[in-house]
Image (tube, rainbow, N blue to C red):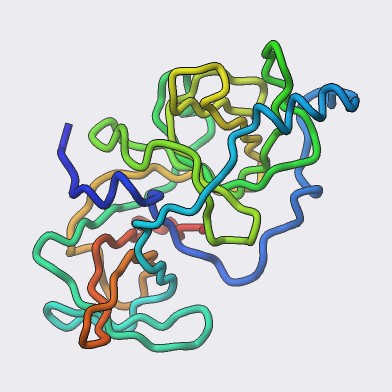
Length: 243
C-alpha cells in the first residue's frame, strides 16, 4: 500500500461540486421495501445512527475549473465566479477519477460516498434500526488507497451532508453498508440511486491538471494569503467529479 501524507487520512476523499443544489433527501428513489416507522424504532435509529462531526484538520475546499497552469501554480475559476491562484507543492497529491459502474461494487471493496440522512430506516438487517442515507455519488477506491479518510464525517455539500469511507460490509439491492469500525454500528448505510454518478478513484499525477478540467482542491492559506494545495482531485477520460 502506498503511504499517503497524514492529512489525507483526515480529509474526505475529494470531489468536485457540480453547479446547482442536490435534490432533496426525500426525493431519493427507493428500490427496497420501506419499513414502517414506530416510536421505538425511531428512538433506536436516532441512538445507533452515527453522528457526523466536522474534522478540525480539514483544509479549505475549493471547487471549480482550471483556467491556467503555470509551473508551480494553477488558476481556478470557482462555481461562485471567483478566480483563485493556488500553489502546487512538490508533494501535492493528485487523485484521478474515472467513470465506474455500480456492477463493480462487491463485498470488501473500499468505497466512499457523500450522502444525507433520510427519514427512513435502512433495509440492512440489524438488531436495532439505523437511518438510511441517500447518496449523491459513489467512489470505488483503488486498493492502493484503501484506508484513506476512513470514517463518517460532516461534509460541506449541504448543511446536513456527510461523507463516509469504508469497505462494503453488506449489500441490499442498491443500499450499501459502508463499514468503518469494529462495532455493529460503526457503519453508514447509503442508498445509491440509479441516476447518481459512480467513479473509480486512484492515484494520479500532475500531468492530469490541465486548463479546462474540473477539480476539487484541499488547500491551506499561508500567512501571505496564498492558497497552497495539499491535494487535487481531477476527472479523467471524460469523467466529471460530481461533488
